[in-house]
Length: 474
Image (cartoon, rainbow, N blue to C red; front, side, top):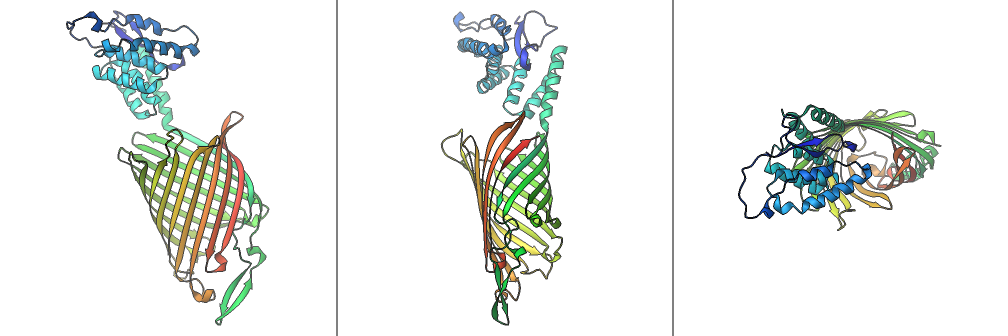
């Protein structure tokens, strides 16, 4: 009779490993199936009795010595592989040694082979579930752990340990992330005012220059930004759900330019082998200078086929309702359709350059027939890049947008011509991991610039800002 293999639940670090118990059927978990003995030409080709190797697994040294001992056992067992190619017990033992010495990939292969030779090998099942969890495959690990708990031959003490393991793993399916961002910087156009100090009117066919009030001219100065966000993240076997709420405020010496924004967003990600589907919906409200400026509600759907190529296409549609509280004539419904790609460049697989780009058509429909300019159409191009650099992560994004009104914005501006706008935006950010006391944090450096041109001076502006700060996980 072959010996019984039972996991040892008493070793440190919660790592389930193995030891051999001979001749005790009632207390054990039957692992190796009994095969009929076959005559072999030489004893050198027969897998030896593995009982002597289990004693090497009962370490009494300090926990820091265990990985080296497991590695040594792995080397010893590897020499027997040619003689034990059909032994499920051997591959379960080898996989346990590899797993405990940190060789996750080869451990998974050994444990998979043990289960191919004997699908009911409980020892291999237990360690394979552990390997799946360590590899980030949470739900396959939970499913296999439930299968093990359904075995009638599972010892009571081991059942208690595996039940606790499942409870610990399930905690990873729900996460609450609380983040605080604190930043300070300088902006040369806090109020997003036009760059010109006067505009041209056309009255009775004659151009007339009108100087703008100083309140409508750019205000520059220092500012502080604060943002608090809370995210509830739920993982399921079929995807990921998240609900994020955040409040953001900006204070400066120009109190009429102070900002307060509330944002709530729900997102659903459903990945499969062939594609990744993401849908999100949310609402946002912005207060400017102490007064409600606008509220919006939006939804977005993106589709990305999975591919082994360096670039994967991305398709996206989005729609947004825009409600302006003090100027109802500006209310609109905006839609956007985008085609893009997400790419990985460079030969360095440990630090790839990630690049994304897209282009889309924008349709902005006026909800009030008296809105200046009436409907608006245009297009937008975006480029993004990201790479680990200077001990952190450097990211940059740039966009170009052009919009054209369907009708005249005002009969007294540029002889009643339809307005057009072109806007260039650029943002570069570096994020450096750090510790603030016992908490993980990021040190942030941001540089932002936008430049907007138009055939109407009132809509020409330039804005540049730089800020430094921290992002802290609470």
